[in-house]
Structure formats: C-alpha cells, structure tokens
Length: 545
Image 1 (cartoon, rainbow, N blue to C red):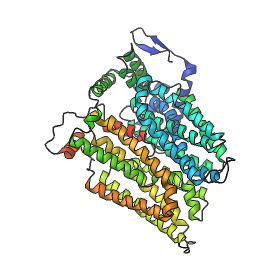
Image 2 (cartoon, helix red, strand yellow; image 1 turned 180 degrees about the vertical axis):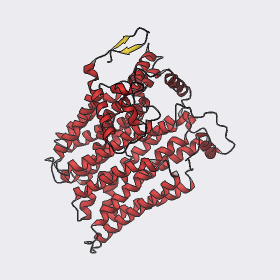
Image 3 (cartoon, rainbow, N blue to C red; image 1 turned 135 degrees about the vertical axis):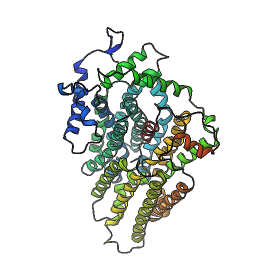
Image 4 (cartoon, helix red, strand yellow; image 1 turned 120 degrees about the vertical axis):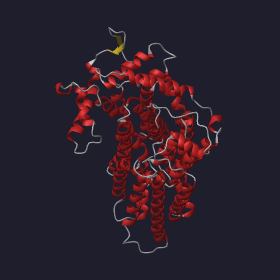
C-alpha cells in the first residue's frame, strides 16, 4: 500500500522514497534513451518532452513529464509480452508434446484441448474482471494476476500428466484474458489523450513480439525450458509494476466509498504529469467523465431497446465472429504443425519464425494505415486476401493428398500463411475493435463490448478445439477451404451490413443504424472518446495479432 503525507496546502502527496522510485527512474531513462537514439520518432512532439522527468536545466520550462506515462507503460507492456507467450506456446511445443517430450503421452485430441483451454479460461474472466478492477483498483487487480500466471506456468513446467497441462493452460488463459482487459484500461487512464494512441500501440506491438519471441525460443529449447522462460515474464512484470501508481480515474470512481480519494487522484495525476503542471483542468474533465459514465450505465434490457443498438450489436458480434472464423488462431496455435504437415523446404520452426516476423512488421504498419483508409475497404480487402491465402493453402494440401508432385511448391505454405497474417493485421486484426468503438453509444459501450468479447473468446475456443477434429473428418485441405469460404461470406457481410464509420460522429453512425429520424439523447462525452474505448476493447481480446 502506498504511503501518503499531507502537504502544506492540504493536498495528499506521496512520500519521497528514492529506493521505491528507482525502477521508475530506470524505466524513464530507458525510454528516454530509446527515443533519443531512434531514427524514427513516433510522434514529433515526444522527443522534446521526454527529458522533463529528469529535470534537466535546459528543459526546466516544460510544464509536464511525458516520460512518466511511458515509464509506467513499460511494465504494462511486459504483461502484453507475457500474454503473447501464452498465446503462442502451443505452436513450438505442440510437436515435442506429441513426441513425448514431457515424459507422458499426449494425443492429438489432447493437444487440441491444451491449445483451446487457454481461450476458455480467458472467456471466463471477461465479465468478472471489470467488477474486480472497480473494487480493488486497476493496479492491485493486475498484480493479483501474477498468482494464476505463476501457478499456471508451474503446472506446465512440472506437469506429470496431461491434466496438469490442462489446468496450467486454463490458469494462464484466465490471467491472460484478465490482463487483456485491465492492461489497456490502465494505459488509457494514465495517458494524456495526445499520446494515448502511441501507448496503446505499445501494448499491441509487445503482444506480437511476445508471440515471435516464443516461436524463436521454442525452436531451440524443449517445452520444459521454454515454459520456464515464459514463466519468468509475469514475475518480472510483478517486480516492476509493483512500484507504479494507481490510476487517478479509479480514485475518482471510488470516492463515494472511501475518504480522501480525490486527493489521492490528484497525487497520482501530479506524479504522472510532473510537479509543475497544473492538473486542475484535467482533474475536472476526469471527474465530469466519471460522473457521466456512472449516470449513463445501461442494463441488459437497454442493450436491446433500440434498433440502432441491436444493429450495432449485430455488426460488432458479426465482425468478431468472422475474425475468429477466418482461422487466425488455428494458424497462430498450430503454425509449426501446419508447416510440418506441409513438408515445406524450410524447417517448421524456421518457417514459424518467419511468419511471426510478418505479424510484428504488419502490426506496426497497421497503425499507419487503419486511420487513413475507409473501414469497409480495408475489411473487404482483408477478407479477400485471407480467403485467397486459405484457398492456396488448401490447394497445396489437396495436391499432397492426391499424391501430386509439390517438390517445387515448398514456398507456397510459408508465403500463404505469411500473407494471411499481413492481411489480417491490416484489416480484421484491428478494425473490428475500431468499428465496435464507433457504433455504440456511451451508455451501452461497456456492456456491449463485454458481451462481444465473450463471444469472441468462445468462438476462439471452438475453432481452436475442433480444428484437429475437422482435419480428421474432412482432411486438411477441406478444412482450409472452409475457412476460405467463411472469409468470402465475410465480404458480403461487410458490404451489406457494416456501415462506413470513418469520419463520422457517433451520433451520425447511430442515426444511420437506427434511421434518419432517430432522436439521440446520449451523445459521446469529450472524456470518453472512441479512441480510448477502442484501445480498451482491443485489449480485452488478446487475439488481435
């Protein structure tokens, strides 16, 4: 628990404890050095502001510290990195598990459960995590997740039976799903609106880097040592994040339950913005936003009370369902096995690393593209390319099934999966979350977002679990063709059902969904932007790889 003291002007401020602040200063220095040495600055105004936290004399006139939110986001990004390791673990570990690397037999059906139980654990945490965060705080909730993370990885590391693997994957899935909610919310609540997008991109980029890291390390280490390395990540997160502050928004939300919470909110915001920055205007905006959000909370009945809200729910659930039915998590969880079955000229582990690198590169590129082109254009293009890639992959496996010569086509599986992930990262990865943030009014966003995320995780479970069953029943080639047809159906859904939301206000979008004569009384708040909600939603599902 943080220590507090009262200043001469009656404001509660944290006691100075240099030992406890050391990790924050080290993180600040690291971020500062990164941007100073980077040839590409993510935002033109960032480098000029980064040194404020170090209180250099030449920059003493700068009123706020932009480094501190970045410093706080470093351990949060470690959590995203850990989430990526959980998602990708079954890909490099799958073949060794089938070969008896854990000293007990694992069948293909059992391996499908090992992969799928992670998503089921994540689905179980979507709804309760919001309640827990509002009761004990964002910071304490995130620190509490270290427990199931560590226990889950311990069960995997020292598994003596497949049931221990099941339990370990379910627990790490619970922790990952819960962190996918709390991490982006924490980031949104500490960040200034000018850098919220940049901090949000850190979370997404570290997640896919965690996937690539797991692919790479898993290519040279056994499942035991891979799990040991992955299990160290949540411990490192807990050791660094323990020194970070609670968000000011949480203190404002619980002020009716406890005394002096607004003063704690001021203290937290003052640390984040710097001692010389006038925080009162931002505090007032936060208070207004929190009060309006608490007044406009909707019930489940209200979620279906208007045509526009129901259509918005159809759009969001439809897009997230198509996201999963594209086969993205099948490709993520079983990449190495797919390449082994394809008989590619590259080793399965090397091909998997190449695909992981494609994910990282195009996830970075997607941030530059999604806000410049129309949503529908990108979604349709993404569907079309993903469908072509799945058709090509299915054709390759069909040629192998019919014993045709594919010796000159060893490049096809790797390029198909790589291009598939590129198209996904530029369309169906980020855009369902963007559209969801735009089609709902503020009063129903939280409830609708949670419901959509539960559906998404459950569909991820279904697709991941029954991929092996589909292969056994229909053949690998038919399974990939099914994914291709579903992506083609996605083109029709986007064209006829999904509205174009780029450049439109929430009121305009709602009127389009509800009819031109709709009376919109619940307009968006200045402090509850679509951008902020988008990053929270995209984090709730960790599968926007």
